[in-house]
Length: 291
Ligand code: TA6
Image (tube, rainbow, N blue to C red; front, side):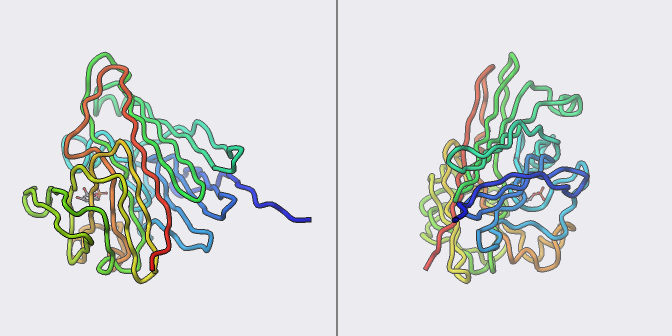
């Protein structure tokens, strides 16, 4: 008798007193999501290799962001009037569904609506929905709806931390010809001329009008992650490097070398949502062997 592999979903006691959603696709890809922050914490290949970086010094304390995985940035990117990267990544989201579809895809729906604390921070009626679907790919769709009677402006991003062997060897393909805002050079705007972008030091850039398809290549692992996006205009490339990492207590010494953030978002130009309008953005990640 042969046993056909099946997809599965279960709950596990996570850190910070939160119950984590742990899923495995019939192909062997695995995923962990925390309702705290609506955050994908891990995405693991069938062979057991993690494709996302999660800091071993990450704090799982209420009110603090988890360093790694794929934090959801809303309604603000970076520093500003709200906490850095907004409040979505430190809020407890509702898990609306956790199911295996007939084709074996694992589908998880999470949502966030403002509570009194959030309304005090940001007085706009909104709802966020994040749909995460695991097959041999990891698909994430973020929907922002203006539930109020007045327009509001917001930025969104999926702040993905990719695991790499050595960030100094990492190559990002697909950014050539784009203009980018360099946050380490006074937000000056430059043009990317390279077909293959490599990081030789700290990097914090918002590439504008990025294409729907980029590759994050890890030459040492002879592998790549393909990032496909729709409804996200920009891509941020970030690594703090050795000096910058020293100011991040939730990053162990030297760990900066094994991560690179490539973040799909609507950042350079925040989006204005009219009453009842929904903005839908999708990111699909796929592992690819890279010779
Ligand atoms: O991803 C770019 C960035 O805005 C950087 O400037 C850096 O601050 C990073 O996000 C991490 O931010 P966090 O608040 O998670 O430490």
